[in-house]
Image (cartoon, rainbow over all chains, first blue to last red; front, side, top):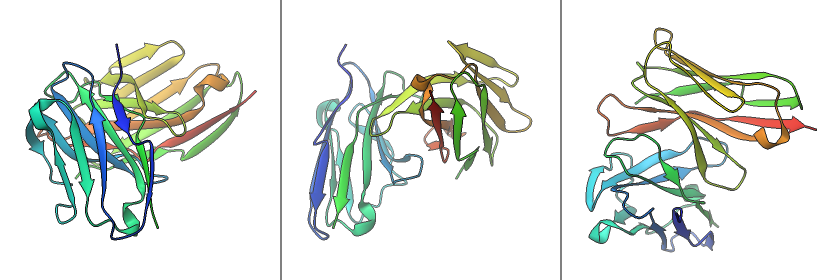
Length: 114
Length: 111
């Protein structure tokens, strides 16, 4: 069974530029999560989708971050414009359950904002 | 929001030694999860504990949940270099809409 795929693996941008990350969850998984992990910290949940609907986005900085999950499968997380403090690893995870349970994580996208 | 404090922050042990990592929650625990993260990679689920007093084992890793103390411990017996990585505890919120991770414990096992 294929795991959670993310791309790109690495991205370097200048502040105020835009960037987008892509996630393809495990086939059949209804729930998809985006996390931000700053160096030396635990991951922070930004947004949770169930199928193509948003369950919770209370921790998403909506002035600059946006996310969508069209057709309840792939998802895209966008930052526009990026700030220095957005430098982090962005992790995507999926789960077959509607509540958390075991989450399956992708390898992450490491973003560096200069 | 819920805070999960892990101790120690980092641990260096000789191969073959036992070790324990603790996770303390600022709020009541409804579900406690343990994940492992290899450097530069995603997280791997280890186990989930839901009931007070529950104890689970997977290979040489045992986790316990003390609901009253709002605490969980992860114990590794006879550590091996393959156990090296960052161990993270995680917990659901009582609404089920949020998930919080602890601060992480970095484990190095010296052969």
